[in-house]
Length: 326
Image (cartoon, rainbow, N blue to C red; front, side, top):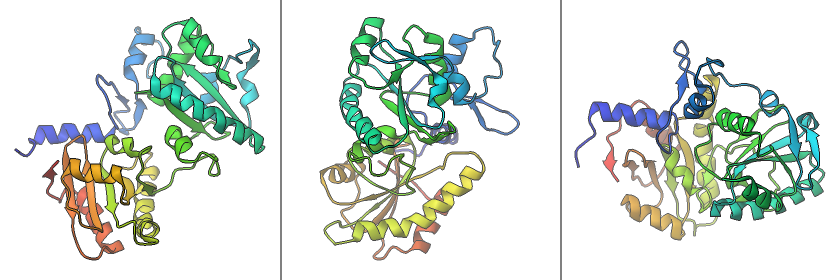
């Protein structure tokens, strides 16, 4: 396989930087700072073709959600009732099978969180194709919804969070700031809701439910022999300081970290990942996988130390590593 051209390499860097998962995508930036103004530009030009709201910067959740919200019994209440609560903004639709599956789990999670005395509310933002479908689907939900007829508000919420696919569950703190965009993964991985409100972990243990994140951009994956007691936990502790340093560095710049961090044990899903990416069977095995670029970076050494991991990450970010094709 030929190495990508310089132009193709630049394009892939942009895809990864802005976590593009489908096309067409249109992102608006502040030319002075380079910061993202709006991730869902296609909705912007549909909703505001004359540019009356230019420059389309993000607005506070409290402002975007303002207005009446519904319960499935027809009761209406004002969005101001959400003050002081954690909020899950749930983008979903009845025609989408993964959405229906998640909703069944989410109903139980919602009940457990409320029974534990937590102040929590979910707002359903429908992507259904008709009001009849919306009503049918919403009848299964014990939480609130933006009225289906309020298409403008539903669209503004999609724009605010740059929604590229469903189901998506965004979890907010009581001030309306995002805690996690991976609410779907968190709900599926934490059925007892013991870790609510699911503040992001610097290092994740790779599982069936979070493996889709491998497609969101470059990921450092440390493969370990999970038959060895404590190996996975030790691997997470080894990676965590480096992950925290990278995340903090980019958070200070108000940017998303350029890498996600995983530890992978031994199971069918991990075996499939090794097969798909044509990785050796060695463990431990330190890798960076970039699915969108179909590239991998591999360090196969007998002992992996924090210094080795940090040097590997820094060399990747400085583009000093030579990719191998996936």
